[in-house]
Length: 533
Image (cartoon, rainbow, N blue to C red; front, side, top):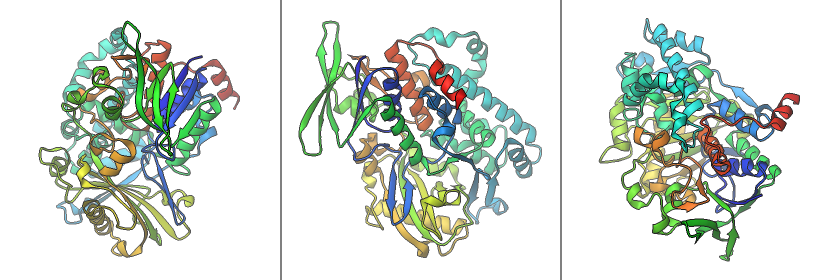
């Protein structure tokens, strides 16, 4: 049995702790904040319970696999509800094609095909081919790339990969927006197929077309919701880690990673951390896994000579977007909004230029995402009230400031929130929305920096452009310190809850010395438990 310290109790930290504890290691998790979950947080106030982070449950097979690795099943841990409709797309009522100012995307491939055919006659067969391609890309990604620790390059030369190389090069060399635009003319369809890039932290004009695999997730598999919200999922991750034997300490701020010279190079020996009283502790370890932001881990917790990814490396990287989060408790019902809504600006390029361009600014108007979980879950809001979560992608820039309660955040964050509220009211036809707000909480880029040590105040981490994807992304082990590993959205395979779960499994592989490219086989005891249940 080895002793492992995990830094951070976000999704990746909890998942890593659970997998390693179940594998026989002694695991302690040190979390600087007063709660677990990291960016997948929660805010409770006046009878409302807001998810303050992820809200789209995609890639269910990744969750299924993780739960099976932990000796249980998804059905035992959470209750999933398939959403129908999947989401609604709103565009400005003043747009030239105002007849498509609100397009509802249904659940299931057949229904989506009928919708596309209505929007663009003759597109049904094109969509079928697009989704078939997306499924093939998703299958290939999970089998050979997402779970791959890239410790043995021969794993990339499997016959199936070699046969697919011409197509893979095309998908990697083409951008997602142009890939969709070459197949569909309708602007709403193009935006539906391009916007998933934002959930990957990038601009659809820069994301490789390989990421059209995301369309297989929401348009074909459909979108589900875990009853109780994503916080319920986090609670289950925490409970499984603890039941496997991991110990979680909150209010434990890691201040440095301890190493010693082993003759052949530096080796990790533990971490130093400070408790809420300001007392310093030393936690000895055979392995350290940082689920904290990689930039912070490398540049703040290690001396320069031991940094694999020093500040000079980060200066050449591209950040994903920042975010202004607006959580609203609203009096009365909001039937105009389904569970998920996307508000797309007409000038798509201007929106992304504002976020990712050379002179970044808050987009005006912005393309925004709105979640109304109270459409599905009665427990997230008091009776006769609604719960809204609004995400406004903005530049990753800490100078945009903090959020706060009831308008008390910094001026630019609150102005951005006001503009989003007015945009929702106008585009969705809810003229009295502002007057009905009874609870308001905002979060800004400075909060992401302060709460999660986020690089540049970004919401997600490095953008998924080609040079920051798969084997080109920062990998899961230090090249300078033996026994130091990395997990989470800022390292491989990337951003999002499923990717964080996969990163935890990659760390497990690294510690085991397993070089396999796909998901690990389920332990026999876990498989037997799942079958009997």
